[in-house]
Image (cartoon, rainbow, N blue to C red; front, side, top):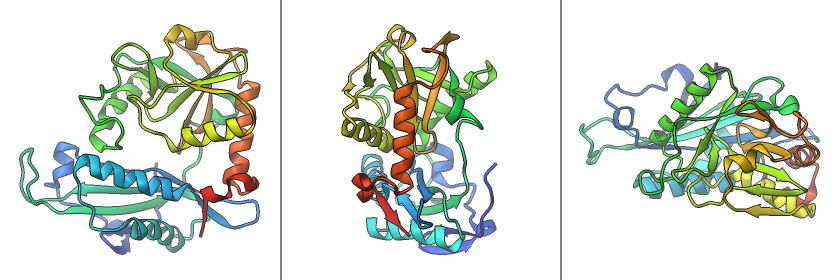
Length: 305
């Protein structure tokens, strides 16, 4: 359950949480063409608060708008500042930030005509996305019966709201079957990603992750790749199959919400020793040093409040 805060930024104004409402004829509610981002703010080791890779998230928000043909009524600078302002006004030292843009009420039918594009930013406290203990013990994943979107069916490089119906169906299926997360294959049968995360495997000291052919360009994914290479851990971006995944020594998911979550089991097959492996642990520790401001090499990724 989302923990209620005091204010939500909506269409350029900070308004009380309970007043942030939309009409039932909001176009995006019916047809799914909206865009969103997920961003985290961390309380750093020195007591300051910093948003992690705010610029990159705002850039992707605008890229999604371009792909979805949504003309945002605010600049990148205004959205970035609104993210900070919403955290401050709610007194959050750390938390999750959700910018969303959607098509408002007006014309109905698939074509939205001149309906207004509206923008909101919500902040709240959010802990481990995949459950208590997931970061320490790892999770169990199940290959979904739902296939990830083909690049010519949906725009896979955009965080379009309607794309996530695919994720909701896959995640519901996995949870009902007793697993923590869904693993999704692409339309050719190769491993794609989770319902809301990118995926990495490790074998013989080499990290492999799916290429950016049909997946969302994850910002945490990019961060992990850069951190690994800075530590001289080889990273390969290429497609891999389920059987290669099953025989990996380590597997982990990455994402703004998931951070770096180890996977200890896939399709009832134990991965490695059935617990987070040494490279996963090393990257986890390095990642949290970065987001907490302890690693000066990646200081440019932190936007302090």
